Image (cartoon, rainbow, N blue to C red; front, side, top):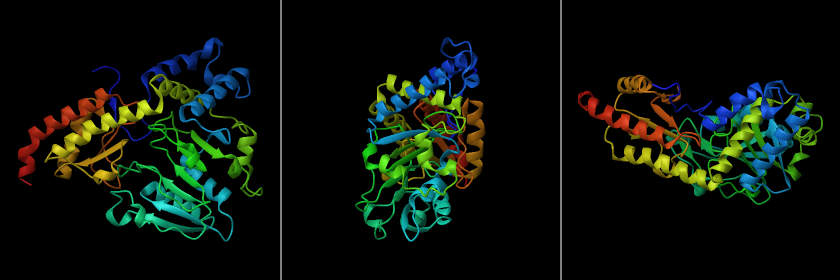
Length: 368
């Protein structure tokens, strides 16, 4: 076995190997400065260039319009669960949420601490195994905003397109687990946020893309660190920025660009997912858990005939260098997270092992 194995973890997740190699060097000496990236001042010229390049490449990839700000913040997506309603949900107003899994539940819980929340659509009744259809969604009158979670890591479901929403209501999206895995029309959103640890970089950093007219909506009595206007005015440098994480995110953006951009990422991710789903559809041993029209291209969730066989599968897979396949504790089973940086060879190795495991354990499954 080499010193690198196949990593299917849901997050922190696999990073592109060229980025990791460059980060190794940058820790010691970034860009020939004689100082490592983690030692540079966040207000110095070297880091100023790094964060400027990261933002510009981020903008280039998605064609982010000039009336949107790009922020690199801390606290992950979980802090955004609170910041969004604190800034965008005025008293006497209602925020509409689309409930498609645990992370949407957590966002709703935080929003309810601030103001009134209406669950406009939900797939909870079927165990979050699908995305609600448009005719299942019922919005409140004049919502302050509509919030969605674009990909649901625990259940392996993903929105194919944005839902239709009431006129005048900004669409807010938690895109933590599929940001920049496919093209995104930023103009359809008022605010987008994404924890970095799936597709964009290391944990501890969150990318926020926010439209100018939304920046100033928050009450000025909010604590300083919770106001979007402050972070915009200070260009993500109000406090000491997570310099290493921003550096790595910038290199991930460059890697995506070098691979052909978001359209190429979408094609690659579709191919990887199809390889795995095609096998699951053909198998009478393993089965996928998400409904076919809601399947995630990022997180493929599946089960074996028994929990004992699932435990055996996870242990034997790890011995083969296939790590991180245990499903979330809330749902059990298995989960293969095949984000941008997961190479096709990893998916092919997983399918090959699944076929082998199925042949070796078919008799045991038949006895159950």
